[in-house]
Amino acid sequence: MSESTGDDAPTNSQDLTIFVQSLLEQMQSRFGQMSDAIIGRIDEMGNRIDDLEKSIAELMNQAGVEPPGEKEYTNED
Image (cartoon, helix red, strand yellow):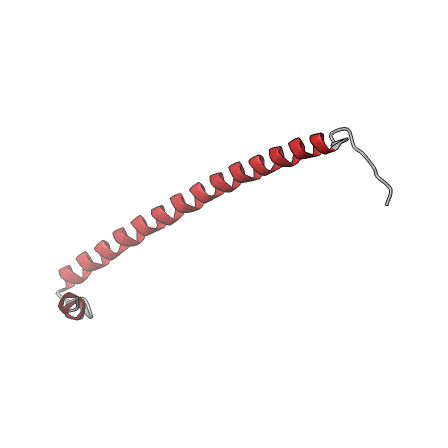
């Protein structure tokens, strides 16, 4: 196998170790950023669902309709 080296390619084992550690740190940082973004979006979606449920309940209340299954949920637990 021929070895082709680029300008930023590690040249010895110590350079390779430093390169791999740096790469892993970058990946960990990006993973953390993506995780935070995903969690933020999930929280936002949960808030929007809660708001939607409240709006639906208000509309049903205004229409004089009892939400289905409400009594079932309050009697459990």
